[in-house]
Image 1 (cartoon, helix red, strand yellow):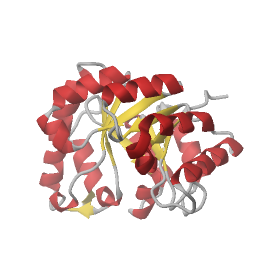
Image 2: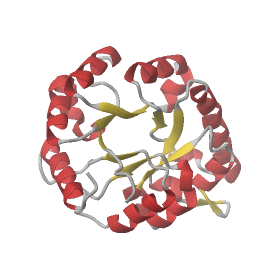
Image 3: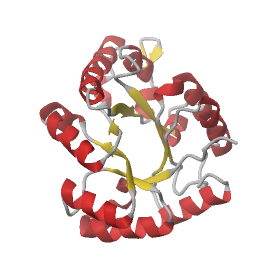
Image 4: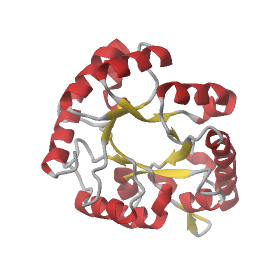
Length: 246
């Protein structure tokens, strides 16, 4: 039997709660049974306050999202925060889709991201890019993400697959996972609303992840809700438990 992959929550899912009280929110997330979190800013505190709150809650940091603006202008701070939080994964969460106007432009983005990733690699931190549907668009005969990733060494740029956005982009998530293989170290489990409420074929996703054997964290993200956000992320985790994935 393969080793069970731990489950973290992307805190963007509960961003209004963390903006009010980061410590109380991560305490509630820990009480649900999540093993860790992926940060998207630090709500009403800073990196040191977040570290203290997460330690108190007993949560690990599966990853840290950092926007391209911050990565360009304050890369050293990003490295410092990742080291403080004890995470081995930093992820760029997106890029302006208007820049995806040619294969050459997409490849240049991949080169810039790889240069950033090389800095993280020197600190034993893995760097990845998080896809949305726009990275699955076809430009100059190939998908945007193919142009980007082919311009970068896997050791400098990984892929954080978001299975819902892969689906929306017109690609089968399981096939995408097989194609990208060991570049995928963390994966966003996301659906139209709570997990299990939309079009994503999760059994095939899990089978693909387990076949590759490189994913270190499952990361739940909910952006549209049938309930208040904390209840939505709780229900998503409960379904993963029912499926034997948490």
